[in-house]
Length: 355
Image (cartoon, rainbow, N blue to C red; front, side, top):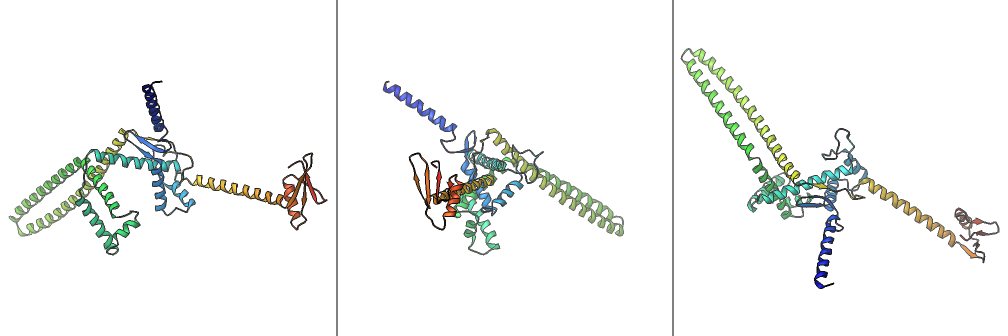
């Protein structure tokens, strides 16, 4: 084989190995999910669920953790809302729910990068200062960084990076839903114009009443005030409803937008590996197996001790004779030997078939 052919063969083998590694989820690295431009490692899913358990204060409470899993409501593709009941949640649904949330965030992050959404250091510092003031006004000055550590942040810089990311996502959301904001402003302007027209009409009516009589004027003024109050209350209620509808519409539009990004990314969730570390049932099975193994070890140790308490000889036909040493524990030793199938004779010796 020429050098060139060897190089070609080596390159082909290398490519095959590379594709095999991809097919086998990174040559040993377990992949929970993949999409067109990324993947999610199983380790990240495990970490997220472990943190969830820690935040609930259930790290050492297997029974409480199992109850927490069962009582949660999971919005997953595999969940059948028609048949599932409260307290019927599973570890598989918890895993799928967490994967969906993590993948969704990864896809949003990718969109932020694609849209070149930027946040300045000044914007980050301003937001951090607002949070600092709020925290220290409720607690005491100088405890903000200690509070962040209590909340799970390694340091202030780590928190700032999360704030930066939150601001970037907010900017993307505003960019996506800006049309709704414009519509809301138009609606508010129309409401103001209508109220202004009503006020003008009321003023004209009051002026006309002034020309007739003082009593009529007073009555008209009272009616006008009542009408103005009703109109003002109606306008306030209308504005509140418009604001609520606008907020709901904005959120719906954002969710629809993100749903479209996720669908376009062709997300695929891989089957769960065996013995998930956060599965209470798997941990219970492991504890049971360990207990069985410990029992077997104890039995083996007891059998060895029983044999050690007796002297054994084997004749030329392969028969064994075990002579007890006459100590106070001979009766116990003889009992253990009988349990192992070795016959014990009254003469102070035991015999068997080579066992």
